[in-house]
Length: 565
Image 1 (cartoon, rainbow, N blue to C red):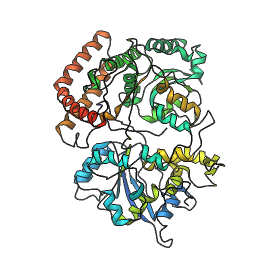
Image 2: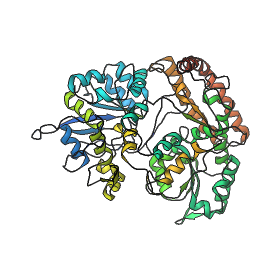
Image 3: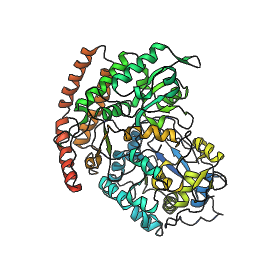
Image 4: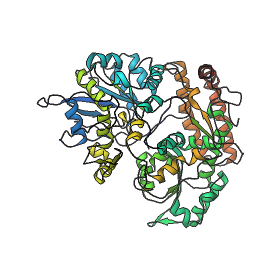
């Protein structure tokens, strides 16, 4: 499932994925849409490809060593652009390393920079390190389709964030993109409306063996009782004990806890319509208490709180995890066909679960910038134009027609067995690995709705990831009112300092609360938590955030108030 990221006021943990790193060196298909989204001309075939350096702060991104062999995805990109790529992808602390490169007088600056989250992009812009893209394209590829058809509603969000158009965002959607690439099927429209990555997955095989029905998992007491029953039964899979609960590793506070917050009804807006740090919402305390009770019961090992994504996936692939609460994109739907979801876990307090969805398009997840110091501006301009064209997105996402996919009688793309396998092996083949250029509107325009239950993107995944959004108990609210101006958390600003101190303290203190020895210790730690947030000036930051919330609400003509507290 492709990730969709919105710029919001919530002070909950930012995405902190981890995984493998890469430090690598390194024929298009026909357009399928009648829109003017063509790519630039193929470079002179007799010229030797030029290598450029690509730095990414996303340590979990693991592209293959560049292979320009004809008949491959990477070879097709080289043929069209005259470029090969070497990577610099630190496994950890990518932002720190990029910061050092920005002030270094000895290290050469990369040609391409991909960041995750708004902070590093702002620093690149403020340091004058990257091109404003309209200026860049007009100078080096004036016929680029990007100057004509880049979605204006997405660009508006990028300008609000960065002050101008500097980045190509990944996972674009929005109304303007849909005008060029409308939904191929109402299925995709439903997924866009109801899907949510943060959620709960349950192993139906273990569910059946334990004699529990999915409908038995409605409230937090129901879930805790089921976890206890599974643990007490001492079930095994392939000779190994069943894991009653898997949380989202070292980013549990950014995935598991955020799902529980929403499920119990926490919002960063109070009942009077004022901004209130979600960490101070009563439902946030309740969410931590759920994990505290699960830890007290021994339903998950405390070691899970420090593991990375690879360890999570290894446990899931062992088929011995009964329940996973976290980012369901880690669910390995391409290999596991037993997942079901009860949707929300309802609070015993009777609060209503909430579902934040934006009425405005997001500014993307990954952000890709072009360095002003590059010695290959023309080739990189044409590379941006190609990778975002119908032809380039077809090659990137689906591969080569007749090899990786065919077309049905409606012209929609059907992956071949090789296409399915090469997509699974993307870290080797390059097929569907360049997420920086993922365009959700395009993908959902050129492929049919799934008919198979199994596999990535199949009905099992869709049902599990829309169960929360489709639940009749869930109350939706428009999180677009929480969008911030690009300089609100400017690097080094007071707002950024308060936010970062709160985030750092929250992660440490929540871990202590989850692992508290008893309820009295939990309550003492929570009281300390609230007191320290006040010392860290959470009220001052909330007041500043409320000013922006009220401005945005007035601008949109939309008022959002807390559903529960």
